[in-house]
Image 1: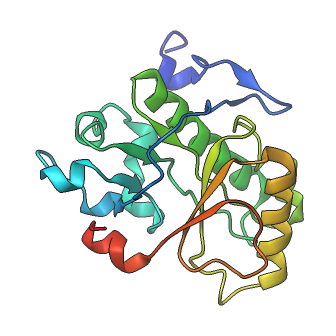
Image 2 (image 1 turned 90 degrees about the vertical axis):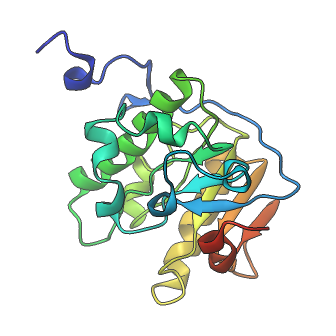
Length: 203
């Protein structure tokens, strides 16, 4: 058991104070970004969907098995142009150890996919200010990143923007893929992807 990489999770070089795996900077075609939800992916997908990236802005249970058994869906996900990393929840009411674990899972899965030759864009999310100690770790500076707006309209606008501004400061992303309608005050090179186009996986 102590030699099993899936038990130890130590195959990737640790990064930062918490030893979270690093997702390396990768480039994608930014001219016409299309995303498909992980819950809509399938084996032997059509040609149009193979030009899409896969997002995980869905309920956590829909991708629960990816961390536990990452090889099971590798063939299916390798069909697509790129993958956003799984958006494990960081709710304010979660204990900090669970938030840290969910960030580490996000980065580990991304590093695993990159080790298998897949193109990966890190999804970045945050909880309360306390999560800022770790939630931006494991992403190479100046990378393309993705953020999701689900819940941000209903919840604390100030809380979202404080985390977003901290992300800009810490990671300095070259592009932010924004899933949903961005707030007017969000800075940076933002590319918006709508929920509607994602569901249908069309341009």
